[in-house]
Amino acid sequence: MNHYCTYFDRGYLAQGLAMWGSLVRHDPAAVLWVLALDGETAAVLRAQPETGLRVLELAELVAVDPDLAAVQAVRPRSEFIFTLTPCLVRHLLRTHPAMGSLAYVDADLFFFSDPAPCWRALAAGSVLVVAHRYPPWHDDGEKYGHYNVGLLIFRDDENGRACVEWWRSRCLESCALSGDGTHYGDQKYLDEWPRRFAGVVECRHPGVNVAPWNWARHHFSLLPDGGVRVDGEPLVVFHFAQFRRVRGQWYDSGQLEYGIMPLRLRSRIYGAYAAALPAAFPLPARGWRAALGAWHLAALRLAWGQFWWRCGPWWLAGRCGLGQFSGRAMAIYRRFQRGRP
Image (cartoon, rainbow, N blue to C red; front, top):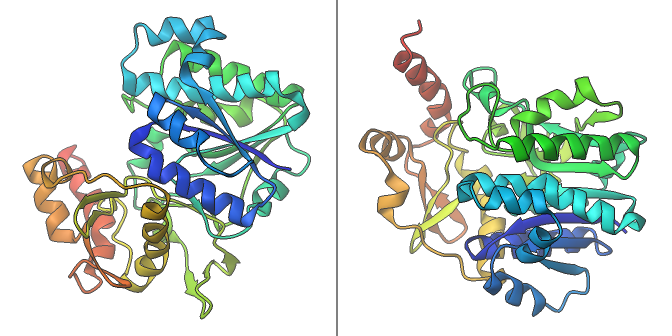
């Protein structure tokens, strides 16, 4: 029995429930612990028929963690949310030692196949991390950290507990989103783990935590049965970061900075996700004003095809494949903004 944990509010109910549905489909004995950030989320989760779903309300966690409560009183919500990650992991490992190991998963992950490769990658280690795997031309990436928080595994042993305690202490000190090379939410601290703690293992399976920021460095194969392979290995879990419904059948891919995924590939991967989302819970619409953002970014997003129109099984951007070069173009644009050659 594998134990996982995550947290989300009403705004991510569709993503969180879709993630849970995909997880239990491929790991039927999985147990998912969800920290519900509002009452409606807790009520919807408790109404789910699955026995592997466990619900913890935010007030319960804050009540048993005075340090977290102190931070909640003074920290902006955006930063406070990131503070929850190590606090939730620490709380569950302390109160449920029988689980042995615990995986943290972001709510916007979606499993395409058995997550067993993640657990195998941990092997005899104490902490599993997954690198961002940015393409070489994405030179702005390191300020966000070498590793991504989206999927982590902690063994309940001396090294695993020490890592969680250190991470929690740093996040209680600061979860600033400045991207200054030292701080970025709960994520930049992960860079220190391999140097500070024994037993930190990097998952090198190419199908784990595939995401908008790294798809461009992988080779994909679309199988006749609907499956997807990444560098010859099964796609295990995709991270649908920044993916939002704008209005009607228009969606925001959030891929401008990394390259717009080609038509057949995005139709296969994002099509499966979009089918699961409304089946789990109504997906809210963001609206065009919020999706377009500042005028200069709106122009770039429209020009490169960041917005997709869902037409049956196809996700149309109307750029005839040129959108896949948007990440390289944005890297040049950022260097120009900074006055670098």
